[in-house]
Length: 256
Image (tube, rainbow, N blue to C red; front, side):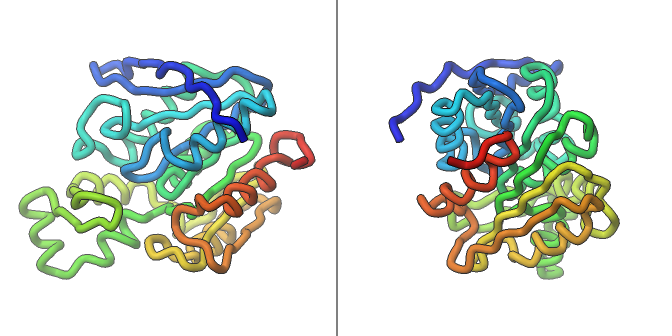
């Protein structure tokens, strides 16, 4: 598929001097909203793939960077789940109208669920790609040894090695705020169609998380697709083709 010409980033002042960056592709609704993962941005493989696909189909698409990510302002260390969910809602409310199909990758899956819960009437569908609700508790705090927890609590930050780049600063605020938004211990009232994709060779988010999530969602139109040899990113050509096939019916298309 030919590359799509990137629109210039739109700059939005969220109200406190921090500027959020987004790209909006005009087209027919529902608007696809791509929500990136932790320390990822709207320039990643899945986001740019969706830009090409939506441009070819005349579909509206919104991509955004949370504060401290990508082209947005602010410090990553100041971010929390509350802050990033509010960033997403700020951009969505400023730049879109009408129904939405939310596509969330990893942490973006958690953000998508929080956005959908806050405004369920607008959400026509939700796709999670290795969705990671509750990761601050289940995958970070629970994995820390007692000395690491003590250092995090006393110093306010812990730097964790990352296979994707420099060490990741995990703040006490991120962990404590995440507890305000835990979803996997109670029913999740969501009636729209939900599609969850997860690789069974994901080293970061256990694929069982998607099964757990599907069980918590109260609506019946929920499907989980497991990719036996898939990793966390699910960005190979076959993975992207699977995303297209899952997304197209939510947009009123047959996937052709």
